[in-house]
Image 1 (cartoon, helix red, strand yellow):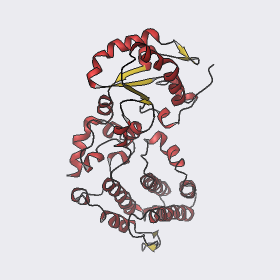
Image 2: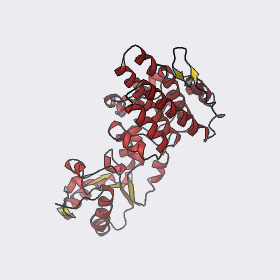
Image 3: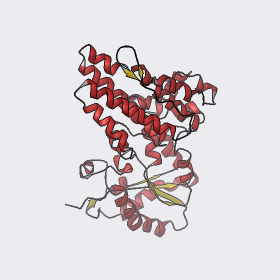
Image 4: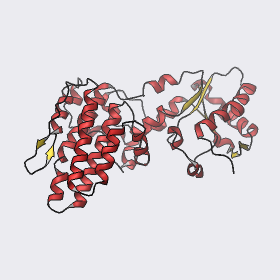
Length: 335
């Protein structure tokens, strides 16, 4: 059995040793770029031996200019006829191992049209933005990195809107961790606690200027943010077997995220004050945080929109938010 190699490293060496020599032999004067950017776990470095069971192997995307697109079929045949059947003991799937494309074709496929307005950004799958900006470019004669740079992270007003939205939805439920338990609903208390935990995690991605992946890799990516104290409090809150522990741990997690916010000068520092909700429940009144962040938004359209965040921040709705074809419908949510 072949020794496992992370796909990005495997594919880059595959390009350098197999694909690039073919390109130089048959098209020595052609300007092109090459790399790998797809939605797979390998783009984020999360792939392991299990990942090799599908959609995995030595591969490369060859980007050419639009005027050169007429050579695509010929170039594809050249690759098919000249690539080895295996590379470092991994199968090379010939025509499927090298994808000849333009950068516009890739962006159109993954996200549709490039965002033109702040609300456009809210209609794009966050995971697809991550896919386009992750991965690796092996060679860049066409400067396709310039397109990727435009998508590296949300514009400031969009980021502020998403931050405000997360604090707002936390505020809607922050007292319910305790209240559910008070009426004997331990399952409900755990579910609310977990929802708040996820929203705190999403805030951390925003504060760190990182796109969050979809649910399969969400916890893995969060751990790599290196916010160890927050990670520990959230883990303890979700694992807690008593309401006293659960409430304290999730409150501590919120306080730590507030402290993270306060280091970034996004707003005036939030006051960290634990209030009594009135039913023996401790809260921070995070709706006030949402209002403070909202005031910093300069785009009136965003500033006056309901604080509903983006569809990507709602788990398990990939069929809706992950399709570029739904962007126009999603846009209407913010009108």
